[in-house]
Length: 219
Image (cartoon, rainbow, N blue to C red; front, side):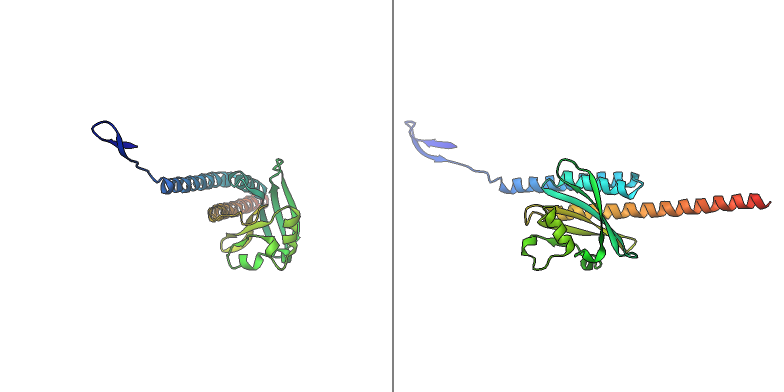
């Protein structure tokens, strides 16, 4: 505030200058969200490359997403078995326990499958507005989930599963959270490629060892 006075010191008028910090605040919020996503992705990549089992990878992914996206009710990873027609759902509830659970479901009960086969994610903002509910939708409602995101998980161009998040409140899942889940799913898929290469190397090593033992026996 800058008062303007006359020669006797009486205030004639006052100049007030305001700084609009709305845009700055918005920028700071976006920067914080981006930093959060980047940190989650970097940690995920490091941990996933160290993991040697599917369970270890799933447990880390689920825990990481639940920690970063605080409003979630449930995080899960679905692993598809197209040959037998079933999927294995590994999930963690946000109830303080954080224990990883698993259930087996028929693949035809998984509503999102047609979209996932097109490499498209599925976002349901409010299950109450859906005209038809699949078995997996009813299972979500039983768990207290009313909005959810299903992100496809591809490895070597093949659909192997999905990374999923669910929230209690409708319309809770933001565009930033969708991108975070997409990036974590991509990192998980790349770690799947690492396991695949590792398994091929191990199988070849076993084959070479078997051949050497056989050659020694017939000498």
